[in-house]
Length: 254
Ligand SMILES: [Fe+2]
Image (tube, rainbow, N blue to C red; front, top):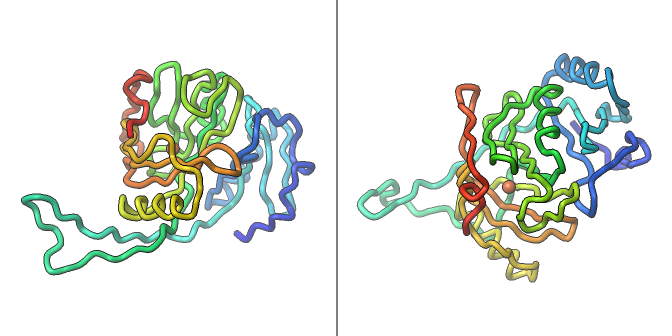
C-alpha cells in the first residue's frame, strides 16, 4: 500500500490523544485480509469514533487514549541470510568468508513500546478488539503482545508508566521503536556508524533481553523516545504458553 503522508494530519483523527511528549503519534497495524479489516473496523465502531482517511486507513483511540490505525497492508517479503558462525570447536563456515558490511539496513519495524498507566487495560483492548495474543508478562509491570499471524515474540510492549525504567516518568509516553536487522554483525555496524556520525550514545549499550531473547542496542532518538536496533528474537506461535516473570528478572542487561 502506498501511503500518502499528506493524508496523515491530526485534524483528521479522533480527538482525545493521551500520549505525552514527542515520539510516535500513532501506530498503524497492517493486515493482509480485506474481510478481517472490515470486521475489525465494524467492531471498533460499536463504541468509539473511527475516522477512515483518503487512503483507507481507519484511525481510532484505544481505551487508554493510544492512537491506532488499521490498514489493509501487503508487506513485501523480508529475506535475510545471516552467515554461519564459527565457534571454538565447531566449524560452520569452512573456506568461506563472511559478507562485509559498511552500514546497517533495518528490514522492518519489529515492535513499539509505550509507558502506560493501566497497562493491563491497554493490552485487553488489543486482545479483545484486535485479536492480539499474550506473549509474556512482567508481573504488575508490563505485558508483551503479538499480532494474530505474526511469529515475532512481540509487536508491542506496554510497560506500566510508573516503573523505574529510563525514559518513563509516570505519564503515558511513547518509549521506543525497534528496527530489525539481520544479525549481531549488522547491529554492531549500525551502532558504530551512528557513533562515528555523532549521534548520542546508547546509555545501556549492547545486550540481550531475558524475555524475548532479542539482542538490542537503544539509542536516544531526536524524534522522541529511543530507537532500538534488534535481532534474534524468539519466534512464537499459538502453541506458546505465556510466562509470568518478576520485573527484576526481566530488565535488560547490557
Ligand atoms: Fe524493544
